[in-house]
Length: 324
Image 1: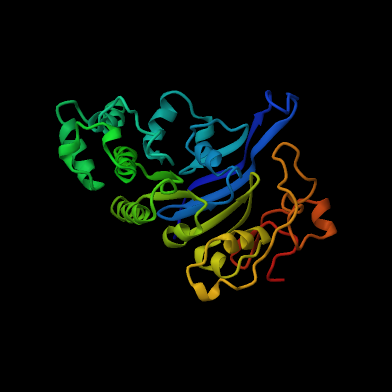
Image 2: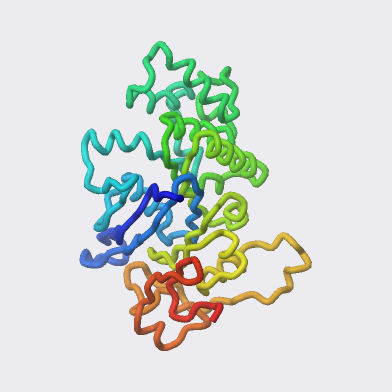
């Protein structure tokens, strides 16, 4: 029987607008706006959507790198949004993150040994006399030669840097890892290597992933389930096979059709074209957030916001799902 490792309840994150063109301090950016999500132990849940939809913010909220404006995050049934001090520090050992940019996420003043050993020493997992052996073990686990232990980040390629970041993330033997666009800054050939590494580590260490990405070809390879996000809201959740075969939400279909097609014989297929302007996360539309761009929009869509409801084994937030 599958168990829920991570659960969010009506999580929101609003940022006050104080500078620039919108100087009204009463207005806020609705980065994450009432998200309910469940992540099952041992799975890879892919969180997809356009840039700026709130994916990375949600990932950081889940592991408490950001504090939510409201709502709760549960890890193994415990509400970690209420933990503080030593309690949240202890829980953070079980939740880690691999950042998007391997060139920015590693301290250029620290060598590889110091980068990987930092969490081990901070949480007092390994003593100083044993740290070199543990770092060498982690480096070999991710495919970096232990001879490179004293080298600095600028001496490595992007793929090697990301391997170092992954070694740092798994050093504490976490249960849950957020992969925040972990391969988007890498060449395609290197992406495949890093994805294979992540899958090998997942199998070996029984990890659970939240894989944040905008690349559906990568998602199709690595995910078990897919969660689609638009303007701070979840619009569709389901098994990977179901989502790719028959998307129910118009926005999901748009994402699928905007992805490059590998087969040249299928490139002449008619695609869904979106019109209208992208709504502002500051001044949101009254009804469905996708109504200003949706070619299937009806009057009801402009008046009331659809709830995320179960349908045929998955969840969709649409008044008129596409299969209907």
